[in-house]
Image (spheres, one colour):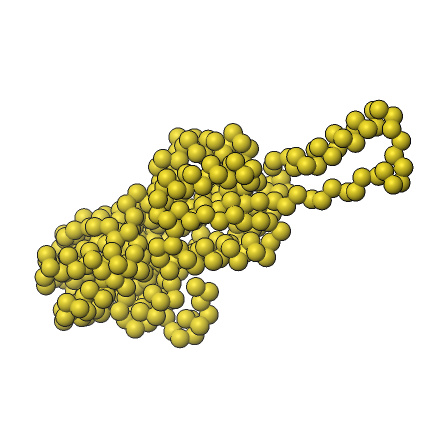
Length: 352
């Protein structure tokens, strides 16, 4: 970790005084230098969703109870703002940088500058795609592709349970294009649709993870495809809120009875509001993406301060939720994943 320059100056001064033969009296003894507080710069994507705000709160709360000072910057969904923040953190001589990147590419120069300054960078949530992975110290986050696979496997299991064999038309409301979550979740949807002869992915458009854009995209789909849509794949809860509002306002029903003309909504994040709608059956299945990074990051920096090197790539274990009792678990490749029934008790216990 970086040397504390103030302590170095004090030690150098003491050495000079000693070499000059100056005798230190009790009154001349310098006061013990104060330990320099460790500073962490945090560049957050923005505040576009309930998930994002919960992630920010988790980190701010954890660092407020830690021995570290947190400097927070809101990137407002713009990569150029986050790159500027990284460079400002370098100028401020922070000890660590935490980055939740807006998109995957375009970080090489800024991260190289941090590395040259001797500042470890911890990437969280979304990943960065760089030529040299030593430009960042560690990444911790979700397996977004697996999240998408789990959602699509639940849908496949649901259709089998309900003996639904008719053609199925799906639309996708994507996250911010180029973000790791969007890449993984969209890929899972596209692969699942291609693997089923009677599934058709009508269209995908970005909702930028916001409720307003999610509603706007769904309104366009309903005008364009009218009664053709059976399933909406929303890449986060806020997009699902907007899509549900658009469906209702169009005079259609949201639910799991697609044989009766209801439109089935799939979502991700499992925020409190999203799980409330899941319990009500308005979101058929909600695949978790945990925003609770705060305590993990504090522990990671504690370990790094003790000279321990963290794992370079760490996935978080996450759940999956539905109000449908017919599916208790789903299989993806060779692994089984539980599907938890949403209850009032579960909602009361949720941290976000």
